[in-house]
Length: 92
Image (tube, rainbow, N blue to C red; front, side, top):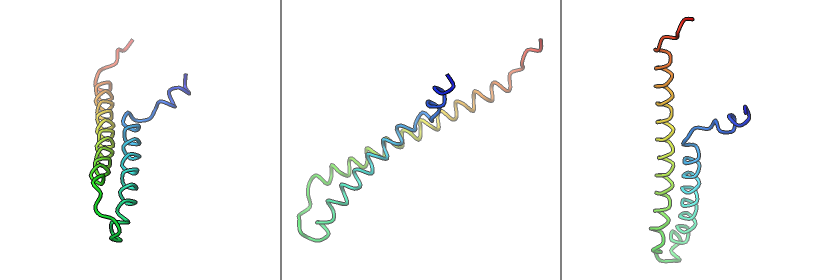
C-alpha cells in the first residue's frame, strides 16, 4: 500500500507540464530545422511554419494548464490543512 502512494505522489499537473514541455520542444526543434535553410536563403517561406508555431503554442498552453492545476491542488491542500488545524479535536 505504501509503495502505491509513493508512486502516485506527483502533483496533479506534472503530467500536463511534462507533455506540454515535450510538445513545445518538438515544435521548437522542428521550427529551428525549418528556419535554418530560410536563413541561408535556399528556400522560400514554407506555409507549414504556421503549423509548427501552433504546435509550440499548444505545448505552451498544455504546460500552463498543468501549472494552474498544480497551483489549484496546492491551494486545496492548504485550505484543507488550515481547516483541519482550526477545528477543535474532541478530547476524550
